[in-house]
Image (cartoon, rainbow, N blue to C red; front, side, top):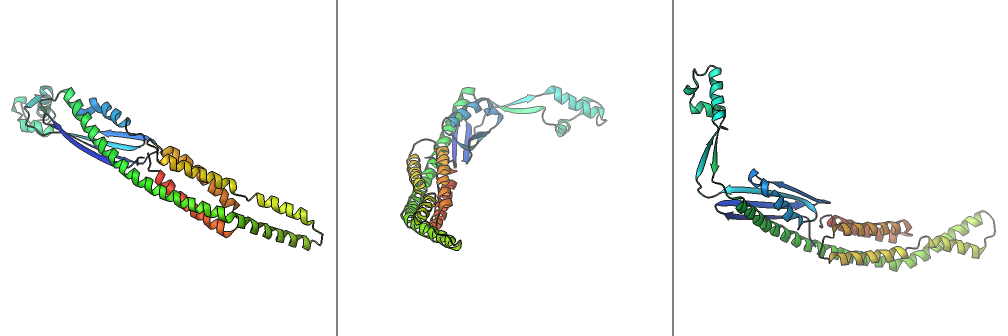
Length: 293
């Protein structure tokens, strides 16, 4: 089980070219992958994306790629003569100089330095591809390791909360019989008082039958059974070695539905208090699940 939050960084140097890749991920419903890289990496960006998509399934993932020359390479100057002459002609036409030949390089550079570029001796495409791919893999491994570590902590917390909810639902189950008896007696008393107020004779058997029917509508046995089943499902799902976040979302929705139904049928303050405790624990579980891949 993996968290969606993590960070990984890797550095590698090949042929004097240093590649630094940082990958960070946070919560997201789907995989949202963004890569920020220099122009030299455009040709291999697809490989970075493919490498990450094979491993990460959910989360907002930001990748930062930095290339830096750490070797003394032979420098090559590339002169754009056409642009240089255009700048010289511009300065002459504006009256700063009489002839293009009189325009010094410092004046040309003051207007623009795009006419001269310094280019390092190039690293081959294959070397760049291998360097970036290997560095991405190393950074990705570091990211996955952190996500797994946090996932273990989340799993332990969720299992603890599931144990708490199991205890609460069993308290509800133990109390429901007494609550039904008290509810029936209270309902019968109110109905008898109402009938006496109308000065009519009540059919005791018929009255008890109506009380039983109304009490059955407050029975929460089915909801308790389904909630227990969802706890087992959630526990088993937490132990799966695959992306489980969306499945957990669905199970929690079902658990929340059962708790709401129990709350609507609660017959006394004790049951209501148990339901509040259950909802609090369930909300904490829901918040944690939002961070699971």
